[in-house]
Amino acid sequence: MDQTVPPLIIAERPDPGVLLLRLNRPKQRNALSAALLGQLADALRAARSDEAVRCVILTGDEGGFSAGADIKEMQQHGFGALSDPARQHAWDLIAAFPKPLIAAVRGVCLGGGLELAMLADILLVAEDSVLAQPEITIGIMPGDGATQRLTRSIGKSLAMQMVLTGEPISAERAVAAGLASEMLPASGLVERALAIARVISKRAPIAAQLAKESIQAAYETPLSAGLAFERRAIRYAFTTDDQKEGMAAFVEKRQPIFSGR
Image 1 (spheres, rainbow, N blue to C red):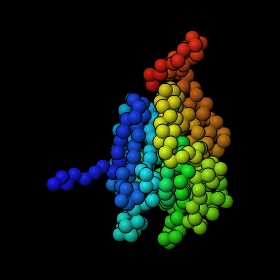
Image 2: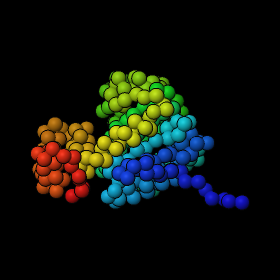
Image 3: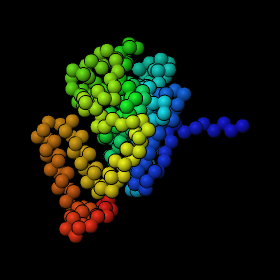
Image 4: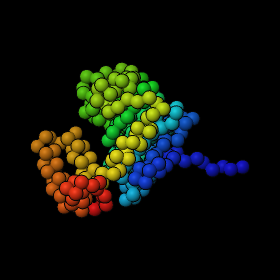
């Protein structure tokens, strides 16, 4: 009898420049165990060093994106389940992934699941999505970034309402509030994510990473510091081969071929 344990992250290459990662704990509604986060971090670490990968999509399954943190682990280990150095290292690595990352969310996206989705650069939601930070209903509060990232995304009032009540918002509300960029039928969610990823994968990869870092700086620094960061980034972009190729292609009226150098 085959006792092989199935992977908690399923990796696919639907396009040469695109990596698709699926959370794979369906019986636990993709709860974010330490093992799952570790495998996700490993997959992104490999993608970071793979020059062929220019954009990554993260999604769940037909049952949903993720029901959040693994409550059994938290009940057993208490705060130690969250503060475990290996788990924190995995979470930090995911947050620091430098290439464009798209989250395609359908169904439940709760607690740590929403905190994970907010680490993406582009968040797409299916019409059946339910998004919430329900930690207060079990006597705690968000601990993987929601009080900071959610507030920066949707503003103080709605973030307070979601965190203090634990009540969910719909996909439509998430788009209206600026938490997600598009709402789609569930049947077309991943295909739309792939379409966006394919476009991004054809852009200059260094410029894409610099742009991502600059936009992130808008959330983490004062305006003056963010503008200085942007100026340093664009100065570097002008030193790349892709800048020369991109402008030459524009002048010559052809499609550019970006090398990532």
